[in-house]
Image (cartoon, rainbow, N blue to C red; front, side):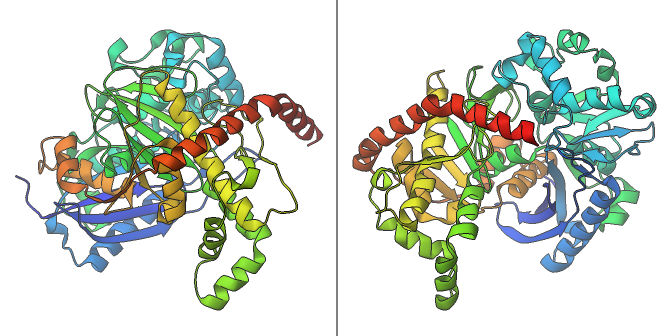
Length: 517
């Protein structure tokens, strides 16, 4: 058994690094966050400075130890999660040759189109549909084609999470979670899809990727002495293999069994679930082989705009609710929720299409746009607020229906993120999908997920499911109301039908606006 009563989870998100220290039962001892900047050199581009990443990490680990009162010697293990498809080109010494190309960067749209046009069987991982320019492979090809000098000097092309593991341990390895979910690695089919890489003139990339691909939580090595001194930690502290941040969030919510699904909320919705069998279809991504748990398959889907639509409505159309909240000393969303609670199921005929940033799943439609239908002079802001939340829940149910049609049955939603604090929102998810909604003790899913991988890497627990059993705790479950679920049946059908009715006009309008720009 490993020495030390605590483990450290390191979470690299888009806006900064977050460090959490937990005991062996998953009880948090403290959290520390340090923000870093994003640069936007051109429209559609997004980059970050690896030196700033590292500087922020050193600040966060040292401050985390100080504020928690935990000594470095008490940390039994470390692991990391990181935003995926954030691509780095490194020289032979592991030094970055250019800024990291961030996940949200879509400069590689032409490379993504070429990948899609191959029709390679590996495209089952993106549901046989459009290949996202956000993924790692298109970005790596972009470097090769648009920055040939950088590419020629690059001994390694890696994702952010794998670079962090290499900096911590000196070992050049890849997480199966990273390479399967964003680079088409499939252990069932022998690993890298060489035919796909050859078809897009990327076969030499395979020589720049790390050779070893490790499962989550596997001990990569000990913390390097020079790095330990920088971070304020103990040299040789075991480092467990890490994961993509959203997948670490699913681990932190206890999603390690077939049929269980995590709903990670915020400005958008990400859904990650486990299946006992490989399921592939248009409408969702995956199922990725062994991506989280060996012998299981991981499916993923998402809604591009959810909490961001709620914020848009509050910031632009609810000034009186904001003023009332300030007067009463409460959050503005509490005032809007009070109004929405007075509105019946279906919001008196209002239906919203929540495609304000396009549709990610199940249509993969970047030209879809938001819509509010059924307005009358009798509707007020409570109606619109409730209708927006209902529409988001309809969108989630539409994804679930797509999954069910391909033999993946979500049995339990485990939820984290800002919207999880809304009782109305969570009850609507439960009612509309007729699925219980569970809320866990620790809402910081990704950083707890990293701590779970650290506990396995330190030898505290033998595998991820055992660590989850000891470290993830459900606080309460919201049960669906069957009567309301049946009443919502009419409205979900109208929601789905509306997209089919208006999508062609949406596309014409969106293209006209884009062409004008």
